[in-house]
Length: 105
Image (cartoon, rainbow, N blue to C red; front, side, top):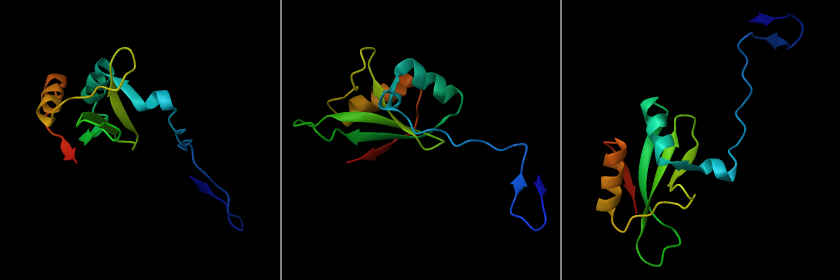
């Protein structure tokens, strides 16, 4: 890092540009992608959340990256995965290799 006197100029060889905000399609993640992200240690939190617009009680999975972005689990045809009970959502997480999740209701 180099700082010049009598000015506010500072330079660094390790400057990073901020990550651009995710596009709507980036808020969705498929099962194979989430397994790979977990293997790399990119997933910080997992939430089981009640679906906001469901007339009947359904639960969805929300994954939060270490960088702060969140992703919904989707099927191969880009529909958000929903589960009829918390138990079913927990079982889905187990099959993906997760051992911990926060339930938000």
